[in-house]
Length: 274
Image (cartoon, rainbow, N blue to C red; front, side):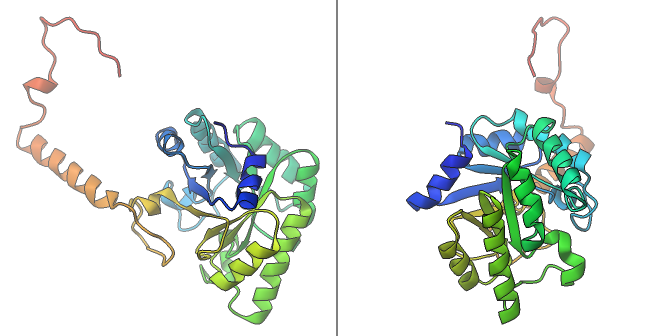
């Protein structure tokens, strides 16, 4: 069954946890969708785990649209959210509407995600007014790493705590249907979750959120350049893939691959489907 925004809102009301993961291409989108994930985020994290940038800032709107299109082709059920890149929505309401509209119209997403709280309430409201569903994102906002001095937990100090709580309320009041809480103390996430009517999706925000999100490359142990405390690795595919590639190289060098069973013969007429 296709997951819709009203169903996501109902999950919080019913006390059902929401499972969200990132995907950036067709094969992973198919796998996550068939596994039953509620929301697929086409994250700007693609800049790091897919393109090899040091952070998310270089990701372009065209990159986001391209990867969203690939994900959409692999999904039948999950709600698809496009993570809007840095400077694709901050300049003006008009530009935000145009670019977020492209993510929906060209990319095929069903909602967009924006970073920022009270400073983004006018943008969120303007998007919602033209029926573009918005997921907010407060706390540790990766597009603000230069201001924050890196990927540092936010909200430990009283002033920050109060600001993040106000940001979450502003996002809800502006019309967002959900909000990501990243890199904040679990006690703050609990207060936000109990205060808001919309679902909270945690990443490094503890156990009290309405749902959780992880980057799929982190969950599967593919991206191993760093391992944040909040990540649980359910597999170590980096090691599995590395070993498989080493075995392939060894067999090629030793002339054991390809073997006769991997080779075509002139006398056999067979049409293969890939």
